[in-house]
Each structure stands twice: as C-alpha cells, then as structure tokens.
Amino acid sequence: MKRALVVVAATATLSTSFAVATASPSGPTARAASSISWGKCTDPDLSSASAQCAMLSVPLDYAHPSGKKIKLAISRVQHTSSAADYQGVILVNPGGPGGSGLSLSTLGQYVPKGAGGDYDWIGFDPRGVGSSQPAMHCDGNYFHTNRPDYRPTSQHNVDLWLARSKKYADTCAAKYPALIKHMTTIDAARDMNQIRIALGVNQISYYGFSYGTYVGEVFSTLYPARVKRMVLDSNVNPKRVWYQANLDQDRAFDRNSAIWFKWVAKYHGSFHLGSTEKAVHDLYYKELNKLAAHPAGGQLGPDEWSDAFLYAGYYRFFWVELGQMFANFVHHNSWKPLVRFFKLVSSTGDDNGFAVYAAVQCSDASWPRSWSTWKADNTRVNAKHPFLTWGNAWFNAPCLYWKAPMHTPLQISGARVPSVLLIDETLDAATPFSGSLVVRKLYPHSSLLAEPGGATHADSLSGDACVDNAVATYLATGKRPPRQRWNGPDALCKPLPDPVPPKASSHHSVRPAVRPQITPLLRLQ
Image (tube, rainbow, N blue to C red; front, side, top):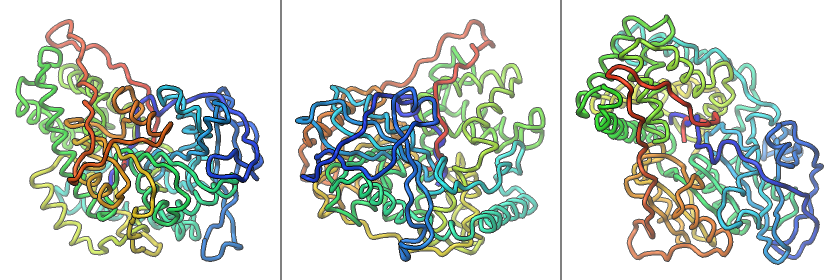
C-alpha cells in the first residue's frame, strides 16, 4: 500500500510527564517490575516531557532466540494517577509499516478526562525503524524530484521503473542481508511481547493506528491472554494483505479525490479552479499532463504533483493548503511550495520509512512475481480509478524483486481476546472501512465506533469529542458501545466538519498556504 507520511498534530508532537514504575507481581494492573535500564531521552520533545528512554535487545530470528540480537528504541511516560486508578501498561504504534512510535509514549495527554494518566505509555521504534539498531537506509535519493512518469505512457517509462525497483531491492538486500529476512509483522508482534516481558507485566493494553492495527491483530492472535484492552483506529483488513489491499486502496483514494474536487468547486470564490467537480477534476489532470511534458523548474513533474495531492485523499486538514497550492500554481505558476510539500511528506533524503515499509510488506505475504500480472491488474483498476493507481503500483514494485522469503499471513482470530474498541471513518481511503467490518467479525468481544461520511484517516484523539470521549471511557473503565446484532457499526459519531478556506483577496490571488503541524510517518496505512 501507499505509505501514510503524516498524522494530525494531536498525534504528531506529543508530550507529558513521566516517572518510573515500581515492582509488584500481583496482576495486569500491578506496577511494573522493569528490567530495562532507563535513561534520559536525546529527543528534545521527549526530554522536555520528562520521558525516559532505553534500548532493548531482542532476537533477530525468533527461531533462534539465543542467537544474534538487534535493539529496539523504547520510551515511557508513567501514570500520573493514584495507585487505585492505575490501569497498567499501554503500547502504541503509529502505523506504516516504518513509522517511528518513540514519541507516542506521550499520547496519553490527549485522552480526555485524565484517563490517559491511568496508564504507563510505552512508545517504541519497531525493528529497523528510526532509533532502533540497525535502522534500515537503502537509498536516500530514491524519492528525488522529476522522476520518470508513474503512468506507463511508454515502454521506456516502464523499463525505467522496473530497473529502479530492482535496484532498490538489490541495494536493501546487499546492505541488510540478515535483517530483511526477519522483518515481518509477526516479528514485530513478538518484539512487542519481549517489551512486555522486559516491563515485567502479565498483560498489556495497546493503541494502534492504521498499519498499527494489523500489528495489534497479529499480537492478539499470537498472545490473546496477554491483552487487556485494545484501541484499533483505521483497521487493516487481514484477509487482503498486501497486494489486494493496494488495489482496494486505489479505488478508495480515487473516490476521495472526487470528494476533494467537489469541495474545491464549492469554494470557487476562493480558489477559482472551477465551479463544478468535473471542472476541477479536468483542470487537475490537465496540469498533470502539462508537467509530464515540461516539469516546472525541472523539479515538479507528474509524480511529485500526484504525490503531493495524494494527501487530499488522506486527511481533510490538508484540503485548504492543497487547494491554495493548486490555485497559486495555476494562477501564478508558483511551483516551489508544491516541491517543498512533496519533499516534506516524502521524507526525501531519508528512506528509512520506505525501506522498512518494503521490508515488511514484501515479506509479510505473497506478491505476484510476474510483471504481466501487475500490469494487467493495475491497468484494469486505473481505467476507472487513475488518481493513485500507477503511483501505488511503483511504490510497491520493489516487491517484484525482494530478496527475502515471502510468508503466509497469520490467520487472525480474536475469539479469545477479551476487549477491543474499533474506530474508523466510513470514507477512510488508506484503510477502507470494509476492513473494519471484517475485523469486527473476527473479534466477537469488540465494538465498532464509526464516523459516517468522514473522509480522513486515523483521527482519534484529534479533537472529535464524541470519538475521544469514547476512547477515554473505554480506557478508564473497559466500557465500550453495546455490540449490535448486525455486522455493522455499533455506535456512530459525527465526523469533524470539512474545513473552510479563507476568502481570496482578489480573483487570482490566494493567501499563502500555512502548513499544519505534521510529522513524517508512513504513507501506507
């Protein structure tokens, strides 16, 4: 799947207070007897939040637990509540695969009603990610500007992308021959269990966003007795990992692009890009085609254009900024803001997230090894859904050549998992809502809280009081919405409203974009 490189500010720059847990073996909410050597965090945001950090050694290969070790970077923020209200340890994963979760130990401050203060919050960088050792870096120049057109408009373009994809896979294999063989989601789940053991607790709670929901699904299937509570926001369909999931995503992003085009047309008075969805749609693809022939400034080509505007399909909080950049490009040939935005969201110069993304996705499940299969499937989908399809295909194309064994995905079962709160927006494109319905069915002790009509991704603890209060109640008491008889949502929350752009000061002048606070994560889920 395409990676998700941003999250809303509420889960991007996080901080709160922290102290070290003490020992008691009496149960899942007992204070933890940690065997980890905690110290100061080098990250200034974590340090200023009084968080503590450590490195934890875990087996590279769980088939040989006494063999070679790798290290996970972990952080923690301890509960601030009384001993009577203490709820135990909760681990957090932001998604990806490839997203750094080290700063998410401070997520608890965003849980309303002080419920986050009842937990010891544990953030961590999964294997290969960020501050964990080794961290994968295969080719920092892979996302340079003015790349070959994603679209297979010529055999030359196809050959260029096949060669680039093969070279990337070969480089990763040459640099990390052992690590890439042990980068599955099952490995990540076993790492989580090692964190649990090192913390000295019998059970953990878990909060997973996006791909992090799949980590939770796998962990809870392997270790159901070790789960106390789970919050899973924007759920991966475990029956579609990963090749089919990408095709599902292509359809959903195209739908969301139409929603954004319609929104831009609604505010024609601000953007002057067309007063109908069709007019904005046609202008978008007209500019894309022009860039394919003549990249702006030699940097903004069709790929950079597509990758920047992809985020209109991910998050509504980007709609105003992207509308402004679209308008300023059309009316004033202002291309540099789009290049800067592309570089920010694509983390150009640092491919750690993409390297881990490929390592996990390409080995988690079987991928077709024949380009003819990819070509046929993506040609068919692209005919009706062109917004993302070819960019998504090439994003995943290193899997054609990945030099690590492909595995059979774990059959997910939540029958013995005691309690799960599922959250999703019905127009989520990165993890389509149908996946949440599948997960709900697999977890009989779950409830699904849906936001009908919400066209964004993984937005819990982002200011929607209905959603956030439900999370707080669940974490504090274990109470979740009553499960209904049908396989559908168990409760509904109205999503946050669509943004409203400022008025333009003149017919062809749009205010400079003000970028919301974001943190690079990973663009898949």
